[in-house]
Image (cartoon, rainbow, N blue to C red):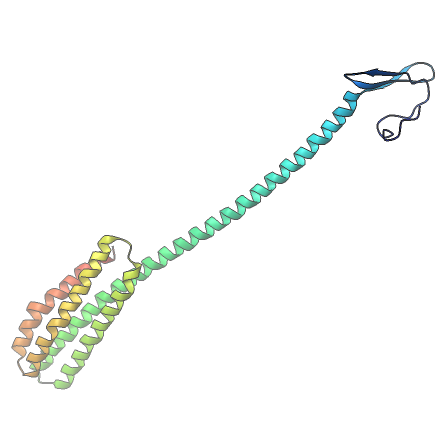
Length: 220
């Protein structure tokens, strides 16, 4: 038996009688027998459909696996981007916190330097040493400038409202201290250390104490 053109890969090539039967539902059916009349194989439409179905299932599996790999790749990239973003946000938050604490310490130190400068003005006025009085005035003003610079830098780093209020209080304290120091300078210039000392203790010292309290709260 020689298979018809286009079916050579499906139908076997055998010798012997090949009775052909046709059924409208099953299509062509072949009973292939050998020369002695023994049954060899029956090929029907169902056999062909089974082979096509197997090929279709295989193709579907390949497409499904490929799609799954693509989805996993996209999810992996998205996860990496999310992790990188979280790391960046954490690093930013950590850096902001560290810088905020550093600036709070700078404001605290500036307050101590301003107090030392104010005391020096009074003390060296008692000793009638104008050069040392001038040195202490410069110390006070340099510390005040550092305090102001630290406040200006720390404001953008603040998120919490309570810390924003503390910074506003620190600004008010600095403004008040800068406003009262000319009274100490004037008393020192007139050689009146008693008045200079009284102004420093009653007006300047409370500002310093408030500075210590608020910078400690700001570091919490």
